[in-house]
Length: 46
Image 1 (cartoon, rainbow, N blue to C red):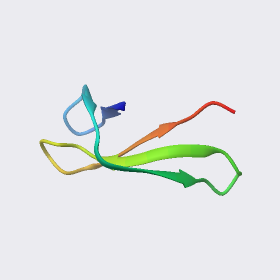
Image 2 (cartoon, rainbow, N blue to C red; image 1 turned 120 degrees about the horizontal axis):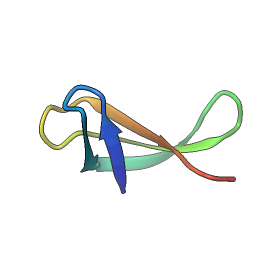
Image 3 (tube, rainbow, N blue to C red; image 1 turned 30 degrees about the vertical axis):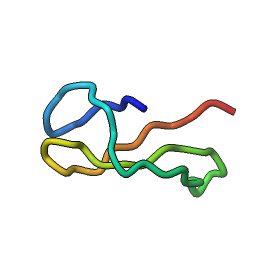
Image 4 (cartoon, one colour; image 1 turned 135 degrees about the vertical axis):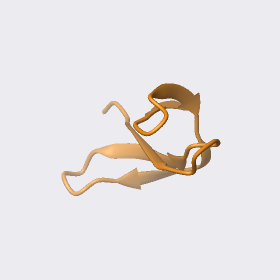
């Protein structure tokens, strides 16, 4: 799944992605940037 890396300022394919639930109950995908290793998140639809 693609997400935006805030450090690289590019949209990239996440690695080591997993689905998580945020505090407000929404679902999101959490992974790492393949280049810099920064945590990337993408909020999913309902």
